[in-house]
Image: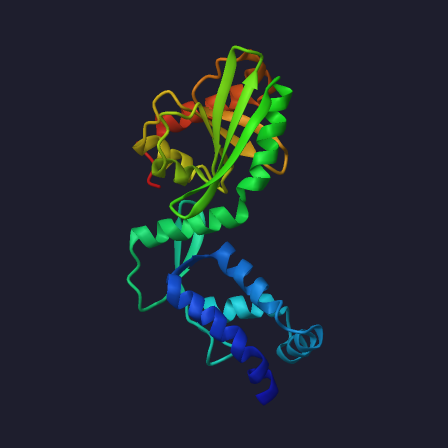
Length: 256
């Protein structure tokens, strides 16, 4: 018992420091963090702990942090308060009265982790190449501390597009869209972030496209592409636009 506590102590100290710093974390971020912290353990230590505790160590630590009855250490942080926000599950410290801004930041942190713009960029470049465009410039910048990518694409001598690639549609309100022709954001677990965005923001003439990085496909969300080759390379544009139409009709009846 003493040996087990000694091995886990630095693990829970690091997890506790992270929880104290951010106070609100998504389930995905917490599991990602636990996996990263456990890499500091040797294979022998991990095997020993799993034998003593009787289960998968990552899951045991996750439950120790997020439940009342499955504690495996006195040093385990307590994040038992569970909140559903924008289709994701978040946990916060029970003594902390969370604010909406902290939930928003937690959502953005997890978005940047699970949807790295470098991966999204590759799918966008492939899509634009299929539509006959060449990428002339790729620029990586920071937006509120998070990385995003701008692409400059040309087709012949007459067509050119400036495209911004973001880790979530929730980043769009933080940027100036006047000089951007299209913004590309990834799919989400539920439509909630898209519906709340549609309710609250107007991007003017800027198009918004949605990329499924795993499938390498794009579809429209807002706006009509002026180039038929772009339109022809969307995966399911009619279905995507029908979905948006349904959301527009229902969003006044739904509480997200």
